[in-house]
Image 1 (cartoon, rainbow, N blue to C red):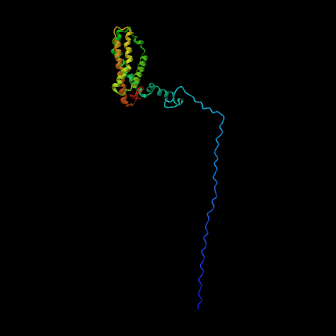
Image 2: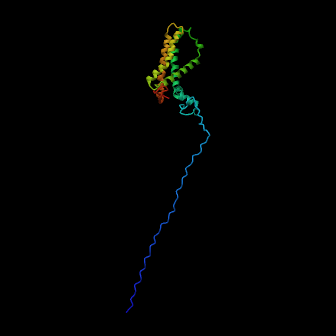
Image 3: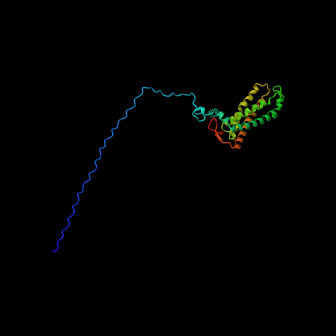
Length: 233
């Protein structure tokens, strides 16, 4: 008989070794040390000195310090009259008013009242003693005053408003002309009355001429120097 083969012995399963997790090193908590407050110094700290000024310069030209702005800027910002005077439109209006005053004075004195002056020649200066330079200076100053008042009232762009503003500007001169009758030895108040009426008309014409010049030049309107009305700058 053929010999029988013995079955091969089965391999024993290898025992699984349990992997032990590595022991974590115990971390000790960090002990926080409370910060000790710094020792207070015995030295007394005095607050910085503050200089007070009697005048507030914050409204001058929009700057908080006066030395940063020029004197002209402060003058034009704080004074409404100066703000009006230092403009091109004011000087242009003054020139227009000067021509109106010069023309109306020549018509009044050299034409309309010439005969009356001749009849009362004992009161007036001789023609050779009249200083024309002073007459021109007074006319120029009057024109500047008319321009400042007419523009400052805020109605320079309106025909009726500019006319009434001119009447208002000329009213002191008209009152002075009427008062001249109480001083001059005139037999009749005719000449002072004509002076007063002509002065009012002169101011009204100056206002209309300034209004026409503003419309021709298309000058913009702005707030007036004494209120919320509109005028030019």
